[in-house]
Length: 596
Image 1: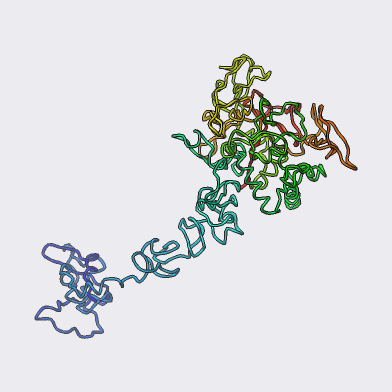
Image 2: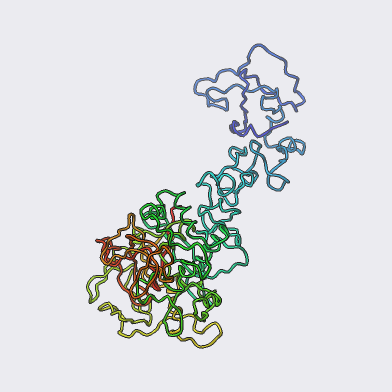
């Protein structure tokens, strides 16, 4: 093959003289092979050199060390004598064909990508990277989707994710099975990772309380329809996540369905015991170990007439009514507002009227009238645990606001007037205004109600069912923490809506006003059982002894205010208003946290 371009690197142009350099160390003079006078060069064992320059003569193209003129023989680089004579002679078609690299057999535009070890022109030719024009093996760190590794998205998912959490996919990333996800929850509906198991719903399943959180009522223009399982890394403890929203009734329903599918019954009791035994150090294990026998108050069936049924555990009314007026009993004139929907047939067993609002409507609301012991079980099943007070401290922060009552501490950047978070929403009930709180009046009018009509389109009577006063999580867009996660998002309803139970390790049993025992007021004692009373209600003793108590967080839609505010702002705890894990209340809810 002829190459002419090597000359460009060594030719020096003198006036009217061009002398080419050569790699030939013999210094033979070059003869133009195309000249008529050219003869075939003969081998020589002696070198011929140009005469030395006279002193003071100008230096020519020979330079200091390269005055030798190359011979006319073909150089090592493949150039012949005619090449040396004129580097500007055009390359003919045959030469160009010789110079072209062989056509690629794999890569972009061809039937198959190049295999590891094969030549490549760019990373597009390979499944892995192209390094030094050679395809690398695909990996989980190359920034590419690797089908041969089973990846479901770039650098995550597939068989390797089962053993290596680092290979699992983040929320909202494509997945095929639960093990592809850091949350261990792949939604069959969207084939993406979701933050929690309760939101991994199949196509066609109800999205109420699953994808209906955030601003705007479902179906209304501008409604966000955010995932109710959204979970954000904490501002400081970034390896831990706190759920963006309170637990909804719809998510609890998913838990019940899953346990029922496993056991053939809504046997929360056995599920919790099994989980506790398999997860040392978990919240459930701490309760089961420190308070043996307490799990026996959890339901093991949803049969309405059964003792300790799921029906009463999920708020048809309070089983052990620590509060005389707990707000769970929904009937005409009762001012009740439990949010877990039971159908008319179930309610009729207890001679209660059917709910005036649909299951879909109530499932969007935050769960209430349920023991925090149940919230702990739910959060464990959902892939996390009940949020800890240390989690709430990070998002509540120490932000003093000076009002007439003195300094108070709130989770927002600025103090929100009444009506901008769900507090004192038309329910005065003996609750006094926080002195100096902007917009607070003695008989606070209703500022939020949804739905505005009953399911049959009749007018609402809030005395018969006041659940419309509870907003779905996230509806109050200003009730968001001043503290934000790494993506700039904050947490909703920490300030208002419901009093959230917060976990503390080794929960105390003897705070001021401590409650002990569990008195089942749904049944009279049978043979061998012990009678008990709770308030003016007679019942059967189901658990005897001290109960673990947990603190509460925030303000309630009804008018409770400043629960554990000082504690949340990093000051001393005041367990005087902590409640036992058996407490059921129409203003009591919860939120989960996660460690993935």
